[in-house]
Length: 513
Image (cartoon, rainbow, N blue to C red; front, side, top):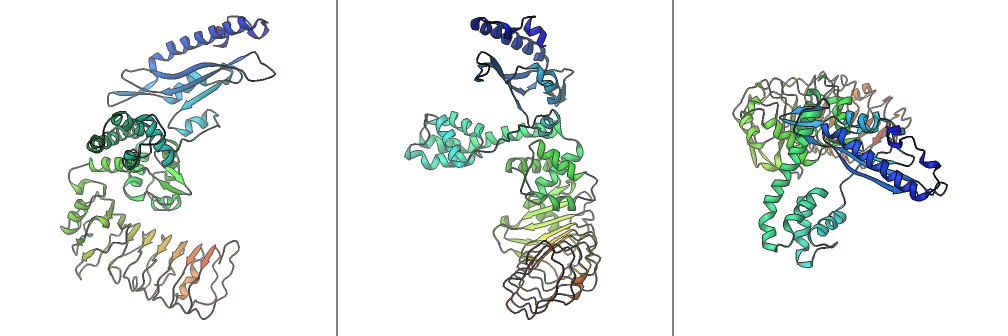
């Protein structure tokens, strides 16, 4: 390519500055023509191909090129594309190979900006100067919207409150802010109010359609399933917990999460997985579309469907997980045999973000949780004891925040798979069960269990325990003697005002008390 552009002339040896400018300009135009003609078949958008003057003092007479390359969807077939539902997407790998596989193709100081959703693509081409575009702050988002709408940085006072509402509706997305601005420009307040809901729905559909395309084309079936797990059940969970919970699934979870992050479908922030709300809703929509019948779907996330299954004792082998937002209901009836027909249920989540109290109607004969449960989270659980026929042998995470539990279960249970037990705020809890089989337990949270008086002696078997939180266990008096917790990294006994003695716990080699 370089020889074709130069035409055998070494422009650096020419003394005439004007001649250099003319030749370099000709070279750039030839380069642009060559590039456009050769990539037309796959419809790659060369957004910008420009020339800038050198600022290098050692070489004051010289020019560099600046190119911004971005792939776009097209409507025809090519050897460099993949088809999806009648639409075709350029393969980003082939795009970079065709346009920028060798840095020698460009002059010294040239800037090539590659825009992609796939971070791994940049790494594979040795591109290490990566800028991750984050959402603008509220202040900056307001300026973007106001520039598009009013031609200034701030809204008129009479539009101030509505302008902030628009920024929120647009999710701080620059495209969304401009999209709203285009339609609202020059209109009165009443028209703004009338159009807001419709514009919000249209923006949602545009974003979902775009991201659904990436889901359909860029992911294999295993990665799609991980995406749906996150969307329906595991958003805002720690990476470590997700890997534990899906360890038996043969999904290659660690690699799958990295791929989803690299493709901008997830974000890992401080070891926690986050999925943007519209992506999460898209994932839920994908699951809803599996069937009109709740029993035929892999996950249930809608209140009406969950209530139907639990109240009417609906049996199904396809259901893997339930996630119920208790803030959406006032009461719930659970059939005495509700879980006996859900033999493959592995995730059961009843959660509240506002500590809402729900009226539970659970018969005394209720005595069963599914054998395959790996995650059991029940905020404000009304049960005094776990169901008598519950075998927690597959349980990985038990989270019963603010429960009414007085005890968990009788006797020794097979708890070899248990990694996390979180009973925070269970103020009626009077005893902890035998934990001799919980040899892989790493996190035990008992903070604010104000009725707890002592820990069982079997805590000495928890050699993998890393974190023990008993903060504000106000009636705790006794900790077992001779505890040798090899892995303990953090121990919190603050607020345990009745603790009579502190045992010799060794070693806490690198943690904190």
